Image 1 (tube, helix red, strand yellow):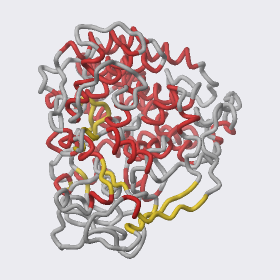
Image 2: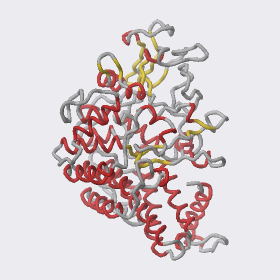
Image 3: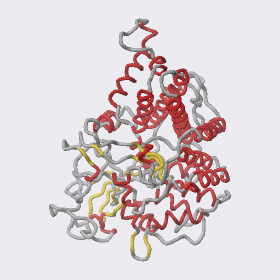
Image 4: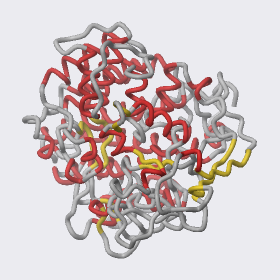
Length: 549
């Protein structure tokens, strides 16, 4: 994963030839045809193509945050958090098929799939690289293509199935056909990939996919389709029963580079500390701008205190209240709560946070899109930040995790709760493994809807800011009710009514200004699916728009 600059240059040259050779019909010296680039690749170059796909999945934070021309993995987390009502930067559901988040998300997934298809279609003709390297690269590309396709189907319903290099003339593919393809591919390629050599063996594989990680995504695909027995059996027999994964003991460690390649991470993006690769791999300031706004708030010790574009993700009041209630045992907040969010009262509590300069609380301006709760989970911590130049050059060197073992356990618990056959580990035991690590008492029974210990509540608390909430609400059919008022006002938080920052006060003393919007809220039979981008509809008459758009 160290050849990023070389990779980008190769792809830029390849893309130039691909787009322009027919028009110019002039051979470029020193630049091979695209197919020959793949077919003549040696082992190192083959690996560099796989590394480049990982780079594309991570995305370029600079182009995303500064230019608004791409979407990154981290910005997708924020967008889906907004859409799921978990952030006080509420999504207003006023967009059209031309709205950038829908268009860029579509492009993000199909671009990754395109590069996967180049590997899948071109590497079989390669007689230079070793068979072992080629076989594994193709299997990984097929797995990643399937995972990206799964995300497209979840969000867009019936997008074209990209099981080939697309011509731009493909019509909608029925979801059932795409799901069948996804299942078949994941099932087949999983057996072509290696397992870890033990519970601590991920570092030997790095950020490449293991057999068990692919099976975890297959179980997730079954769960989405309500194939609960298939989901339960796959997750238990192919992932849980292997004993190759486990939960990190301290939930707060998931926000630190010390958890890179931990037993809990099934798939992660590897960010190296090696000198010379910092900016190329992280796309500049690798999301350190997703922090608390230092112009509005004095930042506690240990958290990143530079500025940025102000692209914050403060928890919504609804999520804060939920965590207050769900994560309290007796009078004690759970360890998961302490590592996930903090209320304004808690931010001022010097038994929880320290301030070296002695100043704390709100400054003279308000914090937009804030309702008095502050995100700790995955907020940039100084220990994770490298680069002495300020926010425009700083980057995070802790790995970005795409799937954790905690999600596997919760997926399995849900599959069992919905009727799937459990294995040696019961669904209730799987649920309680997650709850116990969080610092909560064990649940007495396996239930989906119990507000205190149900699977839905547990997923909401455990997977906060991990891109799951909106998709969960849609697949459960809960979105029209939960998100009915989403985005009908915008909040701005000013601390306490009396402006006193010296000591915590009650929540009824918070000063939040709410401004009404023209937001519609989530509309059933429309917002369950993203719209197919207008630019694609205009360029391809074979596509049909989703209902309501």
